[in-house]
Image (cartoon, rainbow, N blue to C red; front, side, top):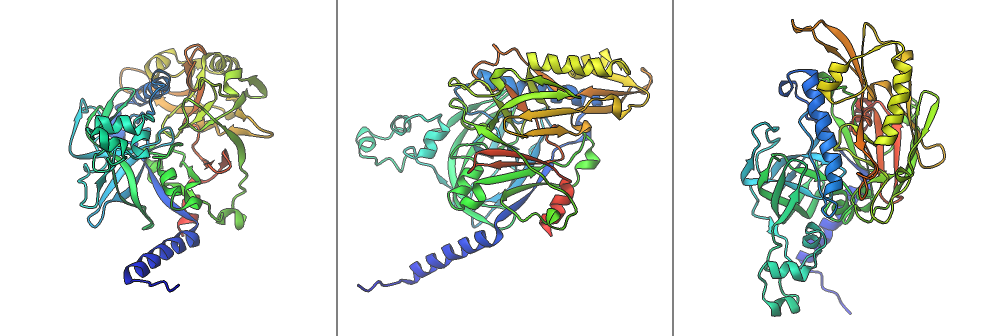
Length: 487
């Protein structure tokens, strides 16, 4: 048999070959993450901390009250990391979105765009998208449409899209678009539609037929989200469908900032795929990863949940409640590793024990700053002339697995700033513990038991190995890692 190769087939083969060559030779994609911290949006450290602590609590508790939905809650300005890519062909638009490992959908504002009650919100990071001529609506019969509608059956979705019954029975509804979807948020919501178009990452790597949500109207949500959680609509999942070596593993290394905008001018590296560690190779930095296994969550499958065995304050180990060590059939328990929540949230019993031990050690040397606790939403806080590092006990997180313990740098859990000096109050040094009370265990039933926030992840490379289902942590100089991988 003679196979005739047409010019079109030859061109297609060359394009596919070029694609796989580009992927296999690079092995990874490096994307800069930008912190959205802006001093102009916060009048005082109290305002910044109060806003951030409130939004962290709102996001955490919202996961509990919307157990049937796959939700993402972008945080307040000053708390989020953003990434950019281009969408569309031949005319393309650059889009900047929040990175969120707690969501499985990529959605963005589309023109014309209206954001209701957004006067006090972060201004859009990029102009609303004008859909390109290459964008196509996702049909109601597709699995992507079902995923966006909480796994509602495609026949129901096509009926909502007004596809005739005979066409539904014959699976001939491709011309009927997926109905609009609704997402609820901690303090906002949106309505959107699904489209497909080409997505291009910073290294010119292109993903054809990338599915994303396009919203023309939101409530309190002016900025879109790049979902990196489990789920077929997340960015890693869609990348994995064309390049498993890039989509099955990603990591980020958040540059330490302590809410200092001068420290976040350097980008934090987001790494898709595997890379050769030049720093470790040349011996400039000893890198040792600590891994813990991911827990399956039947009710919240898009979360990266891990088991927490306990927390040490100094040399005293405080065991975690049983619900943090595993996830039950109702989706209760475990600790979610989350890029979108700022501060770590703990169940009340564990939080109280950690605070009691911490305060027992610190209050012998420093006086409690009760007024600061009231104005920031954080506790305990202390005032002092000069903090002595030895007086602030070390905090260690003990994850499930042999030797899976992570010692947090002091700046990751104890925030120091200047209070007063405004002509009303005397100037003084203040430090606050940056952990939060997530509520009683009964309150947390049906949802995550705790969340590891991005503030506690600063200065670590956090690896999400989706193929081996494990999360890894390693102390890194994140700005140096960026330089090493970029060169």
